[in-house]
Amino acid sequence: PPNLQLVEEDLGLERVNCRAKGASSGFKVAILGAAGGIGQPLAMLMKMNPLVSLLHLYDVVNAPGVTADISHMDTSAVVRGFLGQQQLEDALIGMDLVIIPAGVPRKPGMTRDDLFNINAGIVKTLCEAIAKCCPKAIVNIISNPVNSTVPIAAEVFKKAGVFDPKRVLGVTMLDVVRANTFVAEIMGLDPREVDVPVVGGHAGVTILPLLSQVKPSCSFTQKEIDYLTDRIQNGGTEVVEAKAGAGSATLSMAYAAVKFADACLRALRGDAAVVHCAYVASEVTELPFFASKVRLGRNGVEEIYPLGPLNEYERAGLEKAKKELAGSIQKGVSFVKK
Ligand code: NAD
Ligand code: LMR
Image (cartoon, rainbow, N blue to C red; front, side):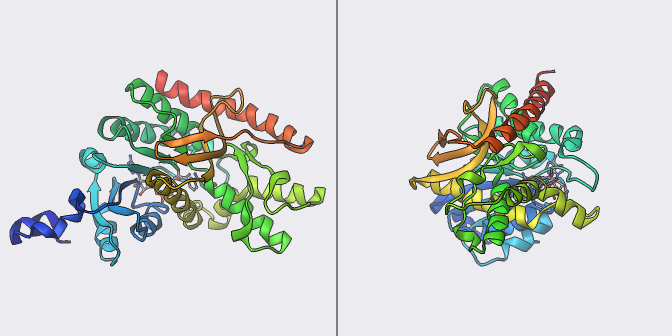
C-alpha cells in the first residue's frame, strides 16, 4: 500500500496528512493487537468514531494489511499502521487513549488464568512502552486474564514512576453487555433500556451481576437469578465452546470495547455523568483492584461508586469473588516484582 509519508514527500503535499499532524481536533487512539480477532473489528469501529482524529494500529503481524484496508473508509480519522516491536514506540507517542487487546485467547477447556504465562509478558512489555512514550494516556486493558493483567500494568507503571490509578482501566464492559442482553431476553425488554451493574472482576465467580440493582427495577424468581448469574459468569465460556477451538468472543468484545472507549473519549472531552463498570485500583473493598461503577472524566476515573445495598445471595457471591480475585491480583503483582 502507498506510504502516506512518502506520498506527502514525493508530491510535496503538506495537506495529505495535515489532520494526522494534529491540525484537526479529536483524540489520538492506539490499538495494540490491532490485527487480531478483536483488534480488527475494534479498529474498524474506532475508525467510525467521530471523536477520533488519529488511529494507530499496532501488531506484531499483519498491521500493514489491516491498516491499508481500514484506511480506505471515508470517515475522518487518519489511520497509521505499526508493525513489530521496533515500531511500538512510534505507535504510542502522543496518544490520548491506548486500547490493548493483544494476546492469546482461550480454547475449550481452558480458564482465563491459563493464558497468564503468555499474556502477562505481552502486557508487561506493552505497558513499559506506554510508560515511556505516553504516560498520561488512558489505558483500556482487554487482554486476559484481566484480573491479573490490570495489576501487572499498574506495577509496571509504578516501577516507571508514572502510575496514575485514574488512567488504568480493565475492560469488563462485555460482562455488562451480556448481562443487559440476557436480562432483557427473559424480561421481554429492549436491551438498550436495561442497565445491570456487574462488579468484582472478569473471570467465572469473580463476575458478580447485581441483579437486585437492575434498571429498570425487575423482580426475578430465584430460578431466574440462578440462571442469569450462571449465564453471565459463563458467557465467555459459552462463546469459547461454540467457536470450538477457533478462539473466544471477538465481535461482541469489539462492540463492548468501543462502547467503553467511546465513553472514555466523551469523558476526556468533558461530558458529564459518564458512568460505567470497570476494573480499577479501588478502595471499594479491601482488595487493591475491583470492578464497580465508576464516573469517568477528563482525567480518567474521577469517582468510584460503592457497591450499594446487596442481598444475601449477592453478599455470598461477593465473598467467593473476593477470594478468587485476591489470588489473581497477587499473581499479577508478583509477576512484575519478581
Ligand atoms: P487473537 O489471537 O485473535 O488476536 C490477538 C492479537 O494480538 C494477534 O493479532 C497477535 O498478533 C497480537 N499480539 C500478540 N502478541 C503481541 C504483542 N506482543 N504486541 C502486540 N500484539 C500482539 O485474540 P483475540 O480473540 O483478539 O483476543 C485477544 C485477547 O483478548 C485475549 O487475551 C482474550 O482472552 C482477551 N479477551 C478479553 C475480553 C474481555 O472481556 N476483557 C473479551 C474477549 C477476549
Ligand atoms: C470473554 O468473556 O468472552 C473473554 O474474557 C474471553 C474468554 O476467554 O472468555
